[in-house]
Length: 365
Ligand code: ASP
View: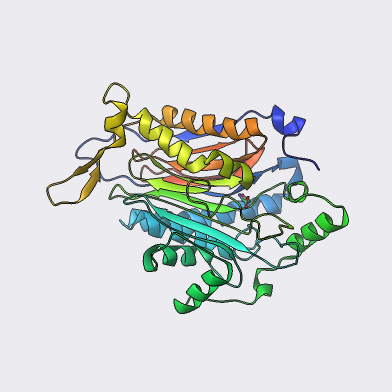
């Protein structure tokens, strides 16, 4: 079995990129910020036709625009995250919703999660079939159940009780994903050999009210068996949002992201980094203060973009040290929108209230 810890992958430097938000003045218009991804992996210019390249960029831009519109109109971070992921789930180019990879048995088992940075409410579904938009189901679990994560048939019963749209299994099928499964079976390959691009989708957002949210959706890995579940629906691994620190969505070799607890690890390091010269560690852990109206407010310190970038990169280096790869997107309460990935490329994009709006694919752009 060939893993991603190949000499080529090992030789690649962490791809780093940052959009730094300027310091906020008291009278400045409220800021918003959005970052999205459509999976990381071996995505080389030489392997993409001009048409494929353009098609991926157009899809990413459409999803980015949908989320940016919500935020620019003063909408909620959760709604922006949902708007982005709905478009990417319905787009067959990505490994989420329609276009999800095939399981060993030729079906599709979908995973998704969403998290609200205001109060750390979270919802997730794992191994669900026949649900058109798993991100909507994850959000329902968050808002309409006392639970955080539902799996398999139980999650589908819950979906039926909440009128989530069902589609036949074939709705998710695509020829190129079926070929990937056939190759896995015929050549006794691992999913990693055929899924050189992971294809999971995700979004993280800061809204004009100062709230963060994160969401992730995936079909998992080609030829997965035994109800294998990756990091995407695991709160703290593939998704995390906390107004005190950041919002993160991940894509990559899920087992490693679970072991590192990637999304939570990044947020925790950011939260503790805010303590520099301001606070004791204990005080930082207890930054929740009660405002006059009784609302709980997180009294976050400010953090520089390069500091947040270093933290994201350090956690991705840790993933690589263990042998895993992939990438993350990150938004901070200050509005920094960042990516970090240790693969050749990552389908990604970001937009901010300062006018940034960009999509990218390869590590060198
Ligand atoms: N992280 C996903 C999983 O392991 C795969 C991906 O990112 O595409 O299920």
